[in-house]
Length: 283
Length: 293
Image (cartoon, rainbow over all chains, first blue to last red; front, side, top):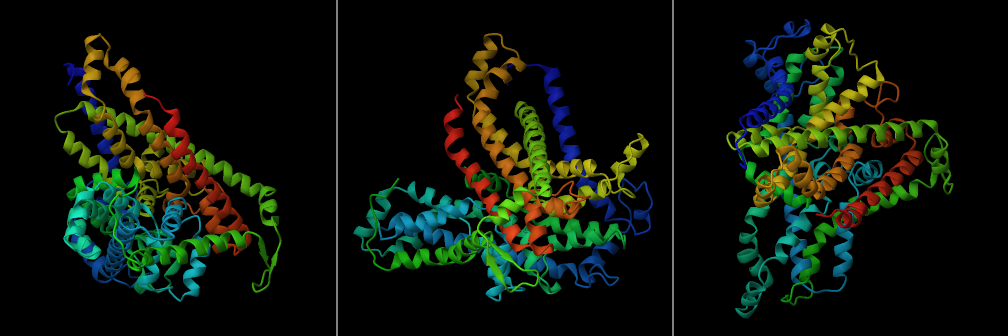
């Protein structure tokens, strides 16, 4: 602190606190709505404080699903799908990127630069832009309604490759030299030296990619037609669009809470890795 | 930058890049190529036959008032999302940067909206502003404001902007905070000793030093408003009412999947690709040179 100005400090606290309250308000109302019964949530004004139906609502959503002919799939099932997709995206992206970055940094081979640029251009086009033809490709490969269809097209991106490339370039040359002198094979060097050194980078990347995979929306919406492959984020939005004809705000909001829970927990409890991953993948 | 020490293997490097190259070819180059190819074709109404028509799809697009309407909505929408989002997060970051006590707690509470999926964010804000049960619309009604985003186009746009800004706020906040914390304390202290007050210090020292972060975030926010907000819009308004929130990326989806107009949708994709490439180029070249300390 440069100087002591009590008024300014007080003002800063007030503004930040106001920001926190406004940012948290939608989540608070979601939580409140998920603890009342259906009838309460249909009368305006809706309550601002939690009610007594928390356990009922969550039990129904988790074990029975939305019910009333709309969606009979219990939410624990769709959450499992989301979890498989998020883990698949995170681990898949890390796995393919770390080995291709290793090849591009530690080997000289024909077409190396071609490969490098081929991967680089994927940075430029978000999946939303080429969504219609990508759907066509996945359909013609027979990957609709499958986990491979949910996961693999989403991992075609260069962010992780670049992060690893950047990291490998900073690893001292002496390590590779020592490994070579000692007669270690390249893969031995990769497993025993490079991989352990990349631990923090991998963890930070995992956090970011897990959230990215969990929060995918458009892609699962397009390529899944069977409820057994629905993810929780798309289910929330689907139900929100029918909620006007069958208003069960309490159940919808319980579902929204569960859809937010895993990624929010990851951000809150792995804050340091999250911030690091965010800053490094973008810069 | 290149490594001095490398390994000599003949086939191993190909094996290592193969998974990523195969995935990139199949799920990136193939569809992107198809988008470009399809943008030059017209398919008849019953599918099956398609005819090569050169740039007819583009010409048709450029004479379509609905396309210009969508461009207009996109420009207004992204300008609002970027300006409001950056201003609010800068304010919060500057205030949080001043605070020593409670800084970590505040930070934790400000960063978690990042983890909420855009589609879920749309659902939450739709609930708050729901015309029949929403708390905020009920309060607005008490103030004499009739808020119905389902039927009023401007209000729908406003609501999508609010939800999109809320979702992106933590991202901007983190980058601004990191930028502020990297400003040398000695600079601020020197200015204070010379008699510059907090406001003066902000505008003359912190703000110029933050400009690289600010421009970086500007590009990221425009890209976010263009593409990342699909979920918000699909969950809240589905492009409506009318065309009030039908931004370009949503129109690609709408025309391609609902309208089954593959040629027109692909032509729009190609235009969006060009926009992204230009923005990426601007970010890489132009901005880094123009911003001075």
